[in-house]
Image (cartoon, rainbow, N blue to C red; front, side, top):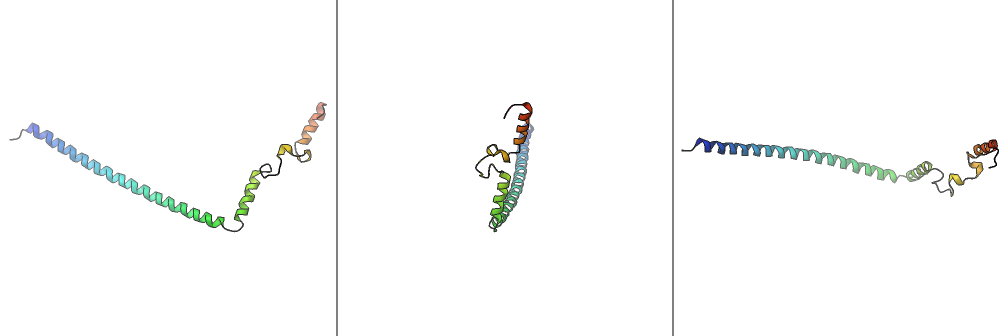
Length: 113
């Protein structure tokens, strides 16, 4: 004869163990599904990156593209960065648009420049 008080906790422990096993299997399936989704996205992004790199390599080797890029960079850089030899502050007064404004202010105040 088995005592009902000792049988109940044993069944309860077995039920808990079975429930933990089901939850573990479910968690594993969810983990594997998430990993598969991430791997698929990684592959998609890798393919896009490689395609872009191939297109850039083909475009960079086209004649005249490098020259166009250099001139565009030079236009963005401005005269001080293009290697003209002097900065705007070192430019002669004739080329300096702020020079007449300074001279006229100096004449108005009566002090020589």
